[in-house]
Length: 397
Ligand SMILES: [Zn+2]
Image (cartoon, rainbow, N blue to C red; front, top):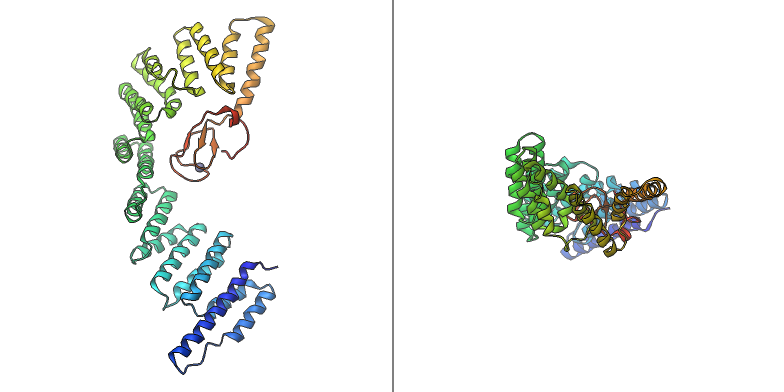
């Protein structure tokens, strides 16, 4: 059974035919009118006999495409693509582009749509060619840059992605600065993996120029310094993250611990953490504070801090597990066995802990992604510490 979408075809064909007749009459020309009715009936028969592709072929071939019908065809093509019927969408858009008298704006729209069809079909090279062709016209340049940006993102060609994002930004006025900073970070990671640390540092610094609040660039610079055993520099960059966005403190605390250890500065992390004591109540930061106290042999202070913090949280599962683990050291025999059991149950429960969440689409993840796998936005996934709904429901990866 054909759905309503296919009715757009005969409607577009009939509209084209009538408008063709009207313009011929108005011009007083002695040419015969387009002979649509015969073909029209044939096309309708194809539709009624459930041969939609033959109907599509015929209607698209015979119909006059003008400003009145082109919108319908563009709509039809885009609806086909959205339903995943990419080949049909491509046929419609190719046919439109092949019309020699198509008005510039409509041709540009058909080019843009065909490019989206190709992207949907995974034919990135062809889509790229069309968008570049669009850039040589005076239409839809911003849209073409935006689509090119998406192609280069998929191809991981970050320098080209930056160029397209800049062109899109200047044509649309829509700021891409934080996205461009992420592209520089991606380029930096590529260079780092290729063993070119100097270029990796240069690119990460460019990210900070674009977006001084880019925590990812600071983390990258810290990681590069730490790998080069430059602990002082690593501490500088990691500590900067706490200034840029304290919510990312849980991400850099283990790294800071390693960097301070490299410096031989046993109290460095405590000094830094003391600045946040009383201000940060996410469980990761608190756990790091507790472990720092334990590292310094101050078990009573660790226990006291844990009890205080557990009382402040709605569902402090992570802190409870830490507390139970700490308490085990004070008992022997059955009580210790019971505490071990509780710790194991809490641990199993925490297997489902999502430490990150996208603040745009709500996607939750156990690891930090800089581009959300759900909505593909950059920098929207953040550390997340709301245990009341952390362990159940929602999209996640
Ligand atoms: Zn998202």
